[in-house]
Amino acid sequence: MTKNVSIALPKRPIIQRRLEQILQRGSVNLGEGAQIDRLLLMLTRSCELRCSYCMVRTTEDGRGTILDGTEVQTTDLRPPVGEMSLETVRKAIDFLMKSSRRKLELQFFGGEPTRRWDLISEAMDYAWHHPRRQDRFLEFHLTTNGLGLTAEHIAALEQRPVMILFSLDGSAKDHNHFRRPLLVSPEESWSGMEGAIERLKGSGLKWFMNATLPPAAADQLEVRYQWAREHEIPELQLNYAMGMWWSLEQEAAYLRGLQRVLRHHANDSGGMKLYNWRSDAEPVMLSEDLIVDVDGTLYQDGAIFLERSLPELKSSHRRGHLDDGFTDFDTKRWTLRELHDQALSCYPSDSKKWAIIEQNIMLGTAVDFVIHYVRKDLNLN
Image (cartoon, rainbow, N blue to C red; front, side, top):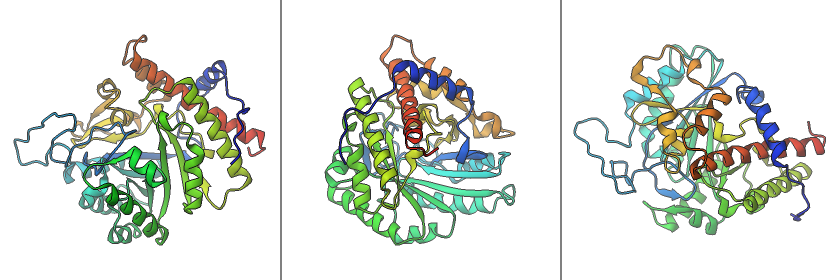
């Protein structure tokens, strides 16, 4: 791909106007996402890897020892901190089924959710046969590093409507640099990921490569894109890491790279679907999705996805507990305006963390603007 440093970038006043337009629409559940309610389940905080851009507080082995050194004592017979119980899984699904919408999604997250395959299996059966599902569309999403995707698991997933969000960083060098192995060796990490790709290619499952780039890899969008094409990845989503500070130079590198990828893909898709053509989830910092933590507490999902870098979001984004007896699902979602104002109220406006939140919101808005700009420029609207 030819690099073109003359690609125009949106100025801040343009981004600010675009953000106001986004906030006025109230919800990201528009377009393809209209009439869908999604609930994420934090099945476990255990994970084989320690990705540099992951802001979730993970346990070392799922048994209560936090990597920052904090010891969590378990004094009863309930599952230890870091693991969701089957009872909580069922309560979470009961809550989702209170949605009034015609389309539902249940997403398994972690940690690495395949480390609790028992919960995934039970959850799919319980949700599929739930009396309140009736004839509504239901799809399961699994966010995974691939290391636990055995042939047996894939065969079981093929029995349900499932989408796999496969977190990948591309080459072995990038994989081991940004996705540091902890519970496996570097060789096991790389070979496990390669094996999962081949098994998925031979399956009937829908799946896509989910590539997250931290600021240090701001100029690597085209590298990830080309790797995906060369390895015949069927679908790709390129993301920027949140909860981190992006310099002006890193922002510019990311936005220029995104424009080049979009233009190249429009000219020659190579048979690969690129999710970045859709921008209705931007800015991602203002995600409306709800997530249930391992202990049954309900949050706006940014509270957990950014808890290591922006811990004060956790308490401010708490929406209650499954034991509170929620009567409906719909009223628990905040509007985009509420999410925006709540996020920026967590820290003093002269603090570094406030600046990170504001910058991440503006970067997501710039991404949205660039996508619409390229679509219009190429007459794709």
